[in-house]
Amino acid sequence: MLPTIYLVRHATPDWTRTDIPYHLPPGPPLTPLGEQEAAQLGEFLRDMGVRQLLASPLARCRHTAEIAAEVAGARWVEEPRLAEWQPQEKARDVHARVWPVWTGAGQVCQTTGPVALVTHGGPIGALLTQLGVDAQRLAQYQSLFDRRNPVPPAGAWRAVQAAPEAPWSLDLAFTPAASPAKAWLV
Image (cartoon, rainbow, N blue to C red; front, side, top):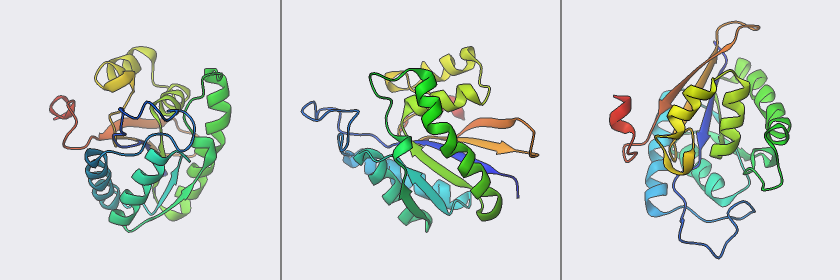
């Protein structure tokens, strides 16, 4: 079984909730559209054999993971290091925080199957950069999705490693049906 990790962005949150800090728990909740996206994500993760999800402590990630895990027949756990990029953090800080989660997931998926990390666009971008996605390719994806994220709400990048020391092969594997970039991926 090839190690496979899915980098998942939370589903669509309620952007109108400006009374709640976006980067601190609980953060804004999901919208009804976000709940539908999370269910679609769960179907995809089920089809990909994902049995475990790790999620940021912010409500939009926790709820995405909860819905997706229920649909997928998987379990989910909160992972505080997958939290949103904080205003005072630099890219190296985010990398230092999320990289141990990545390496741990890589070890777990070798024995239990694919793992999904449910987080935010900033941490996903930091991981993609560390894994070798060049700046031009990353910018191309950021131009497609809301708020310059490298993945749409409830979308997932797939990372597969063919051998222990081989580089990870990365592709945008899932976008929910409601995503405006869906037509581009077909």
